[in-house]
Image 1 (cartoon, rainbow, N blue to C red):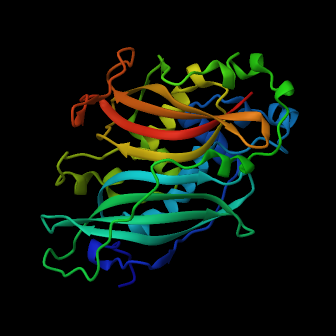
Image 2: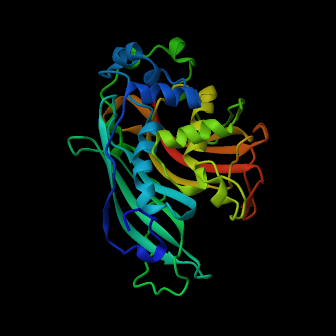
Image 3: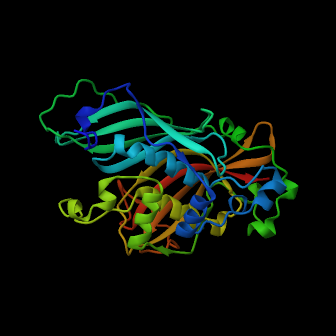
Length: 348
């Protein structure tokens, strides 16, 4: 066959390394389209002048744009035949990415677990995105539920990896250049609140909502060269549980991040991903809201310019988050679609 039908669960092997096509040079055009799709307003990523004033050589890409480009490379080889992307862990943004850089991705299969129904299995991978010099810009683990081609196929070896529940923000702070907090203009940034203004246990309703349109989520997913069938093929998805196309889970992450500006405007850089779960699907026509909780604050050795906030951002569909929809027993409030635990850097 000259075409790629995608891997099924029984095609994966523990320990194998997968080099993904295609290297992607990110440009200011990508940045502009990303901004048009999600509307992020963080000053460091919006303004060269602002970024240079505090110590960056230029305005870097939004961290989630970097994530989506790196992630998109993996889809044809990992999740083309997936039913669901289940979760994330051990994520680290290792260096800023600037327009003009070329990103490539390599994944290692670190776990396999067949489902009890023998129709599917969970594939665990560690994916690493690198720049044109081979330097790591991002690494993360994810696990995904993938169909089997043959329910009777034997699985040679199974293993469920033990992943860290929290990454150390001190290991990630070197990704940012030394910054001048005195030059960080909170008026231009849109909020007066810095590191010391946030307390553990504080909850923030981000207030605003964004309704997702059919065209924009398809444009966004194509922007990242994500080819997963569940996002594009309306004919094929008629036969699925939901009977229609699912919105890429990363689309929800970027919407929640953009919404979080209202309350976290100075949390300008993502440091790492501790844990993440796509709780429920999102469809075109749904409206996304979000709220965040401060789980932890961390001072960073050798960094008097920034601190780290461990944040948990929860996104909900078709329900404003003034009531902080959350877990309910062993499940979640029916409106919850995303539960993301991550570190963000903020000026002191």
